[in-house]
Picture (cartoon, one colour):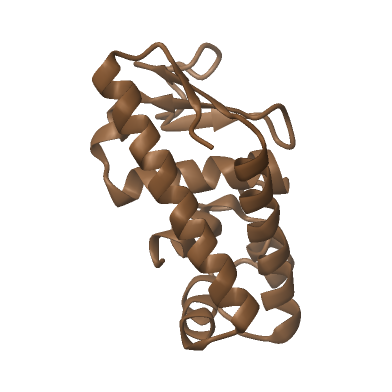
Length: 164
């Protein structure tokens, strides 16, 4: 289901919807790969999460399934913004934000629309918060975290989706 896009020109709305659709296709491919436990799943689990053990595959699949199911059954609202987010000024660069396990809504910085597959990673990161209750323990490839945190770390889902 394509999202409703707010605060956007017609071309920005169309680009956001294309990115959304592409992200959902990648999530669906990841889900199918993880369900089949195929070579791609094994390689990507090892690279992104540091382990291809069955228990971790099931945990990752559970969260990918939550993301896929919510994104396909709910009409999301994607609000585009420019600059910083109130309350975060001067502290960090915000690419996007959402409520953990909240309403189907994501805010995306317009600068991300030029990011291609990286923008898909940002959308997947936010979807993992919104649909699967992930947290931000670390950014980037972070195999230094303990496994319990790795499978709950939003940026790992961003990296995983970028491999599909």
